Length: 243
Image (cartoon, rainbow, N blue to C red; front, side, top):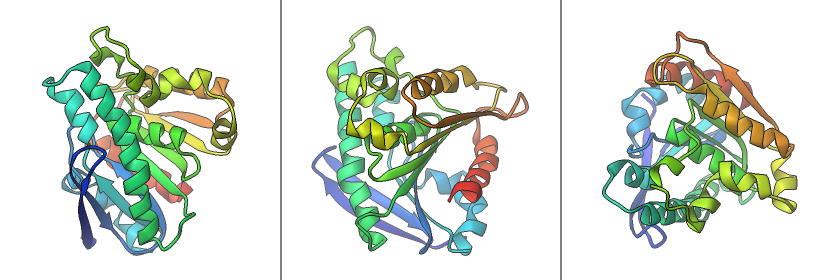
């Protein structure tokens, strides 16, 4: 098992203790988002780190993960739509201003480009991070993605939600950010088995394509379900190809 290092601090943006866990010491930095309510070490408990060990041991990648603060709020059912939307927007700021800064410092580079990856709502966060921060992120590997969180709004659409949701703000995106984003890549692999909805991937792909943003939907077929077995096969394949 690859050794890990843990960095902890208090985040004023999300107003809670934060942590960033790293596996590996060399190679392309990969920010791996957990699923909805997961913490930074979820990806290790469900053996994603184990299947990445050949790439880690070869010094091709370093993997980082942090807690899913916003995802946990959405899933808990304990907070208002406005609170969850605000936290999702603040989580994006936390990822860019704090987590990305820590990754770049760890890599001894202020310009290193990061790969974002994740499954389910982790896929949403990976796509959202690349779309809002293409200056720092060059690729999203968004597995079995859940991209429309508006079902949690109970009809209370708001500005924080709009700016945190690529599905909603991308159609209006213009300018320098879009120009840079058109040099990036969004990968959207999905199974079509139990609890999978590849239609979510096609929906975001169509919006990306309409804006000239490179993307690719890969169907893994009906034998692949919405679970960790699927993601343990997907992630090493794409990182081996693109890292």
